[in-house]
Image 1 (spheres, rainbow, N blue to C red):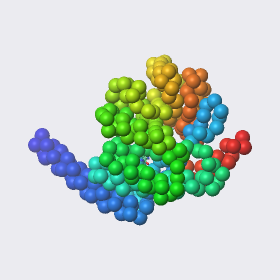
Image 2: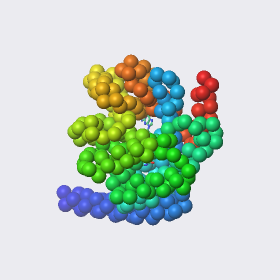
Image 3: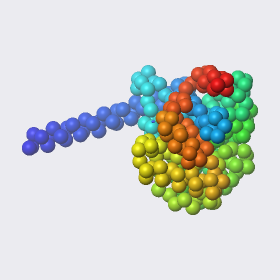
Image 4: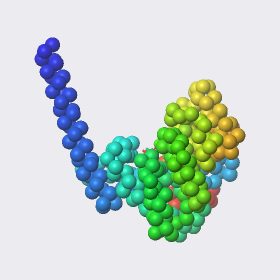
Length: 279
Ligand code: C2E
Ligand code: CA
Ligand code: CA
Ligand code: CA
């Protein structure tokens, strides 16, 4: 037993050291990666269920690093938030998005709405509005082209500052979406007070929805409520025609997921859009 305990301890200790070492590398590589613009974006279309048109694209960050290989945003975004690196990283993302919007305009797609995932930490910076506006102006991009996806958690402490920021963003022309809707633990009261345009139903509600009546009931209720509040609904993580048809029958407005298109680099998205328009 003693032996076992010792082994257990040393294993635990090693694991701890490994994580520390890995964190140090992650920190280092992220700093370098931000400086060298190692981060790239992929885009995933949002399709309107009534017109069958592509309404917009969601920008999703990707990071391929020589030491760490492919690192998922689910791994490095939380670290970026913890370390504060999310601020320069977010500014890089917005810059990259602006660049791609210009490219989309040149390629004959002037009316697509591009959504950006906004980190709570970035949103809560006192100069968030200033920082995003500066980048847009530098790139000559209008806020009308952009939708900001914020999570419930980001706007949960519905203080005067949050409301003021959201109202100002709307005045500037941004659209606002609540991301991962249904996974937060907040009250729904903010839906009444805040100037929101879209609810994005989290993909955990869409997974296996065709097999579970209770999931259908929740999604149906979200759609009804959203429409009563004049909000539009986007379902994310739609992978099958069955899910698509179910959501269409429930009156869901937009769909995003592998069923239509996986996230792709901008050139491949432009090819996808050209084919989509013809069909
Ligand atoms: P999210 O905003 O909820 O993004 C949706 C995630 O679902 C994306 O994962 C997307 O690739 C994936 N997805 C899309 N369609 C399907 C589908 O049909 N089935 C399944 N199973 N998954 C699908 P990804 O790109 O790995 O991003 C993970 C999360 O990382 C995002 O969740 C978002 O919270 C965060 N993230 C991604 N890009 C950015 C960014 O530029 N800035 C910030 N702050 N966060 C980002
Ligand atoms: Ca999102
Ligand atoms: Ca989600
Ligand atoms: Ca998310």
